[in-house]
Image (cartoon, helix red, strand yellow):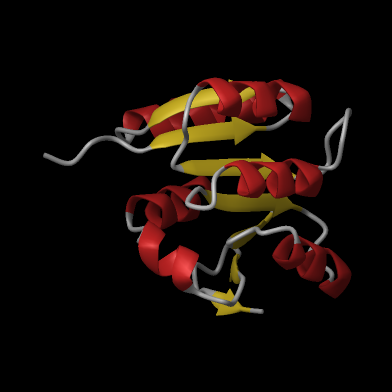
Length: 142
């Protein structure tokens, strides 16, 4: 029996967070949302997650700092950073902080759902390269 993957959705924009939570739940994911980095870290301390979808620009701390702390606490969690800032410096920082996937905002919800439902967590974690996903749906690597 395959168990549903647990997903932490960190986004300070309430409408985005709720949309993502509802969409993921309809695809069979177990989902919890957080509005701030501190809230996300507290939820991750209480409950193990398989995947964390993290907005980079947050009001209380940078999402990449949250990613770094999540990676330190759980080396097996798949961390997906999401930001509109897809410049080389941000991509390098995402990779350095332990992110596995870099989603370029705004992203198409169908592209995200397809990516998550077909995600091979073990393969993603074994890769030394950061996978970049945008609305083309064609993965590239950094």
